[in-house]
Length: 312
Image (tube, rainbow, N blue to C red; front, side, top):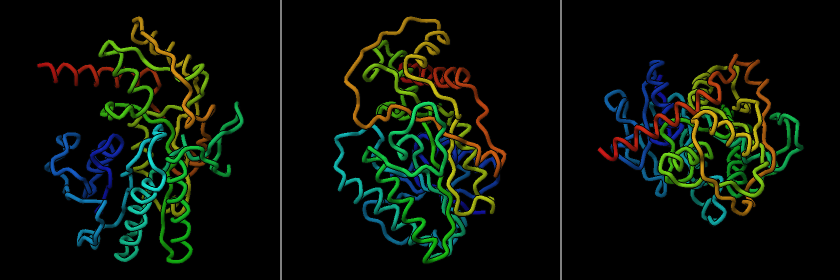
């Protein structure tokens, strides 16, 4: 099976590419970089195509593709300064052009990495958020993701094009883009390693659902099954923690004092986000396996080794 991954050199994408290779897929990665460091361990097993999404044109590789995983995106959830029109003209337009290319070349399935953390908006505290809840995103990032979700339903209706939407909660784990503050756990651990204070927005009572990157790619790798066709799935741990509780766990896990800066509340942040995963558990027997403490330990060791390598 020939599988294409956009964003394959990114945080989740690089882990997914490795997982797909282990499962025997022929993997093609569309990337802005010819030799992305995150894919060095699978370089001889995959095909990397230097691809400019800003000037999207047809490519012959699509004729041979069975499944597309679309993870490439131009903005981040916490970015409140990005221009909404620019977001729509990049990530959303890229996505539509990619979908149209897939339809033209009879790609069997399109798996879209959406955002369970941003797409639902403000929700009632104490309740698990199911896929049936009507999305009301409050961030530009969430709005743009919802645009693409809606276009997938449009293309299904008009072209019978099969898709899966994976609404991923707050991801963390090895190989994060720490220079982009990608994920609170990774950002905090990186600051701790570099003896910098961590940042807590507002009172720190925002509740989040954290899911380890290894668990995420396990779930994504199951979505080529027919039972998942044209479905929407939450990918999450189903467990909620506020930032103060998360900090206590990290302090306990690392057994060290941590400097904290309290800064103004970010208007892109929802106050509560914990996802219900019953649907994906029922359909493909997936649930998160890696405990938060083990995931934090894995991430901390990785970031610490990266710093040591950079200094040597």
